[in-house]
Length: 112
Length: 117
Image (cartoon, rainbow over all chains, first blue to last red; front, side, top):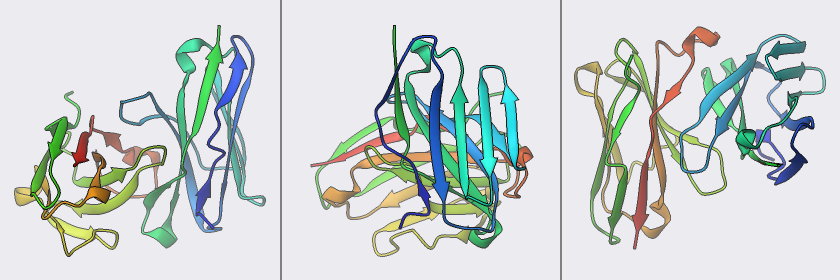
């Protein structure tokens, strides 16, 4: 079992819709959770992080964390074609020396 | 503020040849990371440096991979000899420290795409 799991996709949504990206993790000692966006051929860039259970909103992005279910998600409202990219979930745990463990990423395609 | 710099951006070599990648982190960042990203997968940590000290290299294939970070700034990752399975993107990242808070956000360089023929 992978430590951080994501559906590889592609997830296809129409422009203007809400894109929902999901991630599960296995280490209950995980403390912080990150969403990175990676355009094709580019390096990952951080778009959201969350530490506490519940929702955290930043513009069109909302991160949701449920530690009891070991589940973190990213919602993208009013999806734009420019949001088309691979979204990487990453988890940091003191059990792993505070290192980031990445999931395999979900490819999102927003169709005009 | 300049970002993480890596070179070369692309490298094509034949198997059994040596190859080296260079990384210059963001100024003031004490922690430097080397990741390997295979196609369609997330980055996997190879080694982490706190200043000059390698503090997490459990995923580094030590029979063929080596790394150094002289003077706690620039770093070099070397593969000798390269194998077909080493084809991947090698990403360097840096952060102020490696604690759990978001203050320690990792910033990634553009990566080096290695192709081993």
